[in-house]
Image 1 (cartoon, rainbow, N blue to C red):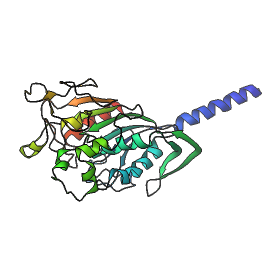
Image 2 (image 1 turned 120 degrees about the vertical axis):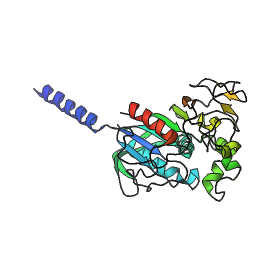
Image 3 (image 1 turned 90 degrees about the vertical axis):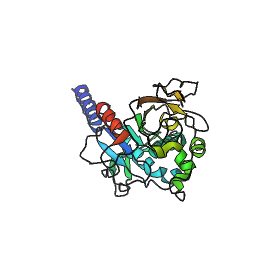
Image 4 (image 1 turned 60 degrees about the vertical axis):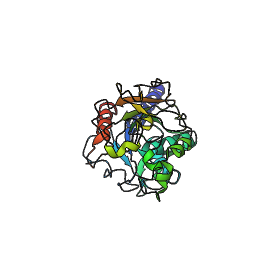
Length: 291
């Protein structure tokens, strides 16, 4: 009888642990920000909060103007809250949000993190779950809409407000030297590259979505941006799907794979407050795979 009681107690303990475990979908904004920092339910940057965007969706808001280094703590707070202990995360980023997450994983993804409960205070900080720690975070994958981990030539040319610290970080050579882009802690970054550029985005090499070129949105490695296009363009090398090298031999960073290339040139950079542009493509992919 005693053994039966002990077995039942263990079963209840196991069941309660499973019940407490949850998956979350984190959305990390890019330049300009928009949502209230610390409020994980404010999706002002993206679109209507009632729109489906993955299981237990959370908006990881940072100011979108300050330096990556100074704002990384906001992202770490969210990762600690929702991606430690028995909880796991799916992550979607937009534009400079890719640079932000890449920097955070490379520099802090191997550190000891306190396991937290997913109940944030007004500042977006969660309390300790059980007093334990773990190395890094529990992340299933990342989907990057117009990822700016490789920077943008618009920043190089001063097309954006040059007094913004983030714009300085987004210079192509600066962004590419900011951290080791190959160090993702074995987390795959699935890249979604838009190609609906305009005449004024001619400063961007190859295909682009008006703000970021394929060399960045496709996760192409190297110390500077190159010119990459859709198949059939005679003037630059093709950006290949998957993680294989591009036409001409240009490699992608480790654990980076092109999941979507905008061959129809239909998607621009901007969410426009309604999950629009290339963000909409990622949202659909997240809805279908983050559960």
